[in-house]
Length: 285
Image: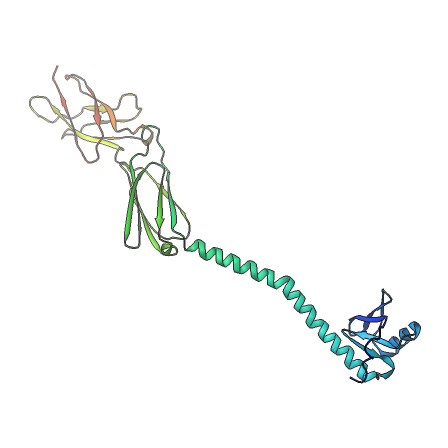
């Protein structure tokens, strides 16, 4: 280019920054800011007794540059500076962020390909000090496979294929004295909670009172649970009775007492079995 200064020239004025209104110069190590036009730049060059100006990697003789060409050189440097700035910004910010995203996605993909460990926790909503949850069976059905474990509080299923994640699975719960539970869900997490409740199998004792020897059904026999207030019944004409037992008093075995004037008192422990009739035989005195 005809405006470029000869090789070997060592200007002491360097343009380091350009905006639409200003030019930032380094003059003998000192940073200055001037207006973005040729006249302002010429004044600085005259003060330094130097006709040479470095713009980027090129050196120019300011005396050979017209206003239009000067604007072209400055604009070109301005555009190159912007491209350089955005490139540095991309390398400093976006590349590290992109590397973190790629690393995260790689790790997530690795995690998603690992076999699953699923824990099923049992929460008893009807706890009872004399009727603990025991020998519960928890079954997990996934794909075409089914696994069952006997547990008290939680079951841990290991080695479930990663392909089961995000798909429907079925969890079943069964235990003596409890309402069965079957829950269908999409497997998104490694923990499943099942809320369970006791059934009413121990909530009543029913049966019939007969006279020992004759088998005659006795009416107006008082049947009760000793020590349990208001838990009593009187047999009807067919000798039938029903005892409703509050939850707090429910047991697998209950002490039952039956009394009728003219008969010996009947007092013994009876197992409470759902849908099974209790037969009481009273002996005449």
